[in-house]
Image 1 (tube, rainbow, N blue to C red):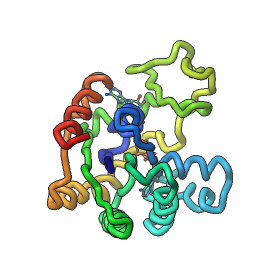
Image 2: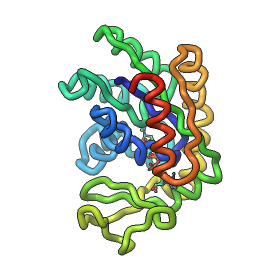
Image 3: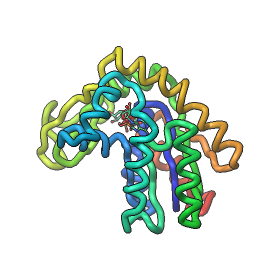
Image 4: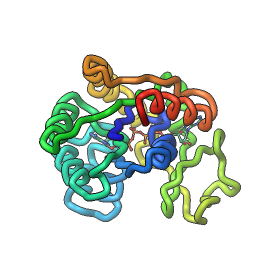
Amino acid sequence: MRLVLVGPPGAGKGTQAEFIAAHLAVPKISTGDILRANVSQGTALGREAKRYMDAGDLVPDKIVINMVRDRLAEPDATDGFLLDGFPRTVPQAQELDSMLADLGVGLDLVLELIVDDDEVIRRLSGRRTCRGCGKIWHMEFDPPTHPDVCDRCGGELFQRDDDRPETIANRLREYADKTAPLIDFYGAQGKLVGIDATGPVEDVTVRAIDALRSYGG
Ligand code: AP5
């Protein structure tokens, strides 16, 4: 299955992507994770992307599109994938359609995670991520036993630079201006399914998998 997850920052895309990708047995491709890996390795792409990410702005389409084109060309993505955080603008979505058309395939479904802004702020303010295995924690909703240590791998937990309150506000504006138009874009293609992404993580996973099953996933 070829699936896109869309939703505001902090909607739970990364959290749900792990479970959904495992359920579908497809690779999870997160543009945010790829960009952050480039930033921490100090690559030219990472240096260019960092100033946009730190401000909560979207990285320019050209950079992200090339990155995704390379990633989708890897053998593990041939039979399916789950895209988390891409596309994020209408030009990115048009480019994705044309990349897939060149390969003779198309997207099967776009799953929208629906949460309101207050919940987004609560989720992002308490988020911690493991430097070792990438597991996402929340200090209130899914707390680790020790505040700085990952229970899964013992790695160090960190707070993302873009989870500061002023940056969160800008990310929400970027979402409303540039990403929310994708809802109409994919709605018009008949590929959009929205689910309520509030409540316990496991309940959201059940809703997501039920939605996929009704579309053959
Ligand atoms: P990216 O990493 O994609 O960030 P985002 O879309 O803002 O999403 P987040 O990762 O912040 O949130 P999420 O929805 O994954 O939520 P999570 O599961 O962590 O992008 C970062 C930056 O990179 C962008 O700002 C941009 O600059 C750049 N970028 C990336 N892709 C780009 C693109 N295509 N084009 C241009 N620029 C791009 O959950 C959040 C918290 O909530 C966690 O603590 C979690 O434990 C908790 N939580 C999750 N679910 C629940 C629940 N059901 N109940 C309670 N808590 C929950």
